[in-house]
Amino acid sequence: MVEMDCAARSPKLTHVVAGTIRLSKKDKTPQRLAQVFAELTALISLYEPDCVAIEDVFFSANAKSALKLGQVRGVALLAAATCGMPVAEYAPLSVKSSVVGYGLAQKEQVQFMVTRLLGLETAPDSADAADALAIAICHIHTAQTQEMQGAKR
Image (cartoon, one colour):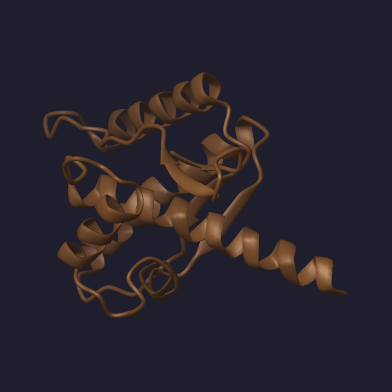
């Protein structure tokens, strides 16, 4: 989770929390998806974000991985909807462009820039956590741009 600290002399991004939901390979898919749902709804209740930002569907060469990711993404959307949260969706290219400046950036570049933009002492604990923070940063940047464009009209 990332917030924009507008009270600062010059507005800056502030890291609130990030992590990775670890699932047991011993559990069957329904139990794993239930765990994702339970943890996400608990986090939404605890941190009360204004919005949930999620990565849009992308195409993968590995159909099995894409299907699993789609299931988890669906559960994330359900968790947000169940909590009454608005959802913003961003394409992977948009997220990378917003954070790194290059839509085809590598995961290491995303981790580096997330660490730098948020002023973290160390990189997030996983590439997935860095990706989640990158999506949050992309949402904040996009919302700021839309707000500025609305003010000009």
